[in-house]
Amino acid sequence: MKSFLPLNVRIDNRKILFVGGGKIALHKIKTVLQYTRNISIIAPEIQDELHEMGFNEIRKEYEKSDLEGFFLVYACTNNIEVNRRIKNDAAAYGIMVNVVDNRELSDFISPAVIKKDEMTIAVSSNGENVKKSVEWRNKIKAMLQHGDFFTKSSEPNKSGYVYIIGAGPGDPELLTIKAERVLREADVILYDDLVNSEIVDRFDAEKIYTGKRKDSHHFEQEAINEELVSQALQGKKVARLKGGDPFIFGRGGEEIEALRQHGIRYEIIPGITAAHGASAYTEIPLTMRKISSSVAFCTGHPVNNIQVPDADTLVYYMVASTVHEVLDAVAEKGRDENTMVAIVQNATRYNQKIITGTLGELRKSEKAVYSPALLILGENINQFIKDNWYSKKKKVLIAGEDSGLYVSEEYIKVLFSSKREECTDCHNHQQIEPLDLDFIDEIYFSSLAGIRNFSAFYKSIPKKITVKTANTEVGDEYKKLFLT
Ligand code: SAH
Image (tube, rainbow, N blue to C red; front, side, top):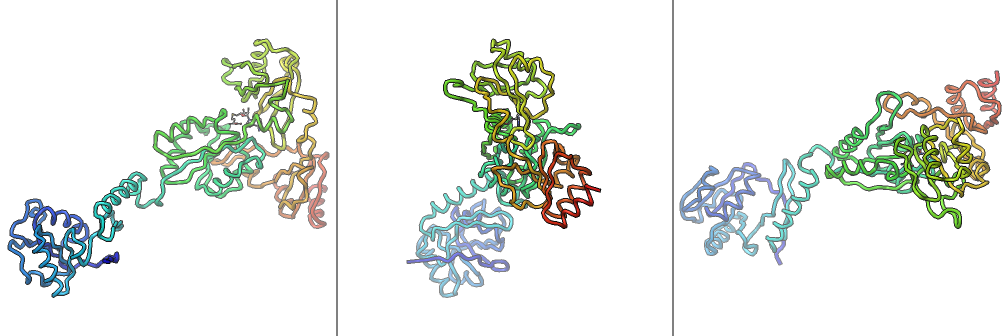
């Protein structure tokens, strides 16, 4: 059996001879031409297209001595006898021959080639199936062109990919395992206001804050879409991280639209939406046998179009500035004034706060509600709410490394990150609200670095907070910094 070894043969300063001046020769020459112009053609007649290419032409019948001085020969005549003679003559001179479409007579065969700059892809079937080689070559070429491979030779050879990811409502542990994996692999993370900075800080990718800061530099949705598209077109793996779930009041649909328009590939990783987070962390089941058999997710915006669906439990997002309008709309729909309402601020975070009352009471209440907050209304709001599992836990702020001392059955751990505090007004970063010590029950200084870091931002510690230190050294530092 014949076998052919793929090689790249050096051909500069070496002469190549084509015997034959017709279509077959033209076809072969077109490939060879990509690598050398040191080509001669011997044939009594040479077709115009070949002639115009301007190679060295010898217009005569082939004879053996013509082979002298050539490095490679292509036998391209349409006469098998002549081709066979060329093969035998060349063997006498020790010259390698390719007899077109005849692997039996050939010393070498030419693969189907894709050439771009210094790169070559050569497809070969060992001479057995030329058609298949050409087919494969064409397929590979189409594939590469589709992936923008050729147009970006200086870029890494991958096309961009976008993950639209839900980060959950706040508690960093509510991030899914899939989201965690993708964020670890991402080149760039574009994140919103509602994404907990503790999550963002954990990953090394380049980070772009796309939230709506209180200053004039906020991102409009249009600009976010453009940023997403532009990052992806640079060939990056882009993680688009949004609070809660991307498809619940998350504008994920609009971002996908933009990606589709640009032919950018993407996928969606769901997140725990604020309603589910609030429900679990306040012990309000959204449905309950015999009490609530339907639930609707609604929005308090825009204020002139507040909808009140006919569901047992209603959850309103975006209510911080529209609580009264929402409650009025619900009352107008005929809901009983005694229906229970819970407003949950900062659900699943250390500073989660619940305001409860009946529909009638809260319509009259002047209590301020701060964002992010959502409102839950229905008969399923029960007596446990003030005393729920989450509010029962102590909130401990850990300044320094987490020693694992505090068990999660009893404590909510808040990690003090100096990065977080420093960046409260960094320009390219989220405006993170400083820690609210009112919600903290205990502070644990686990190291000297931890306490010094903390003292750079806080000059005093409210009396109601219990302070613990890891050892006497840290204890002495505490006395020096906070008790004198
Ligand atoms: N896609 C998000 C919602 C974005 S709209 C999700 O699925 O949760 C923003 C609104 O979400 C806020 O105005 C608020 O109503 C709600 N929200 C988000 N996080 C919250 C939280 N931790 N506590 C209470 N409400 C929250």
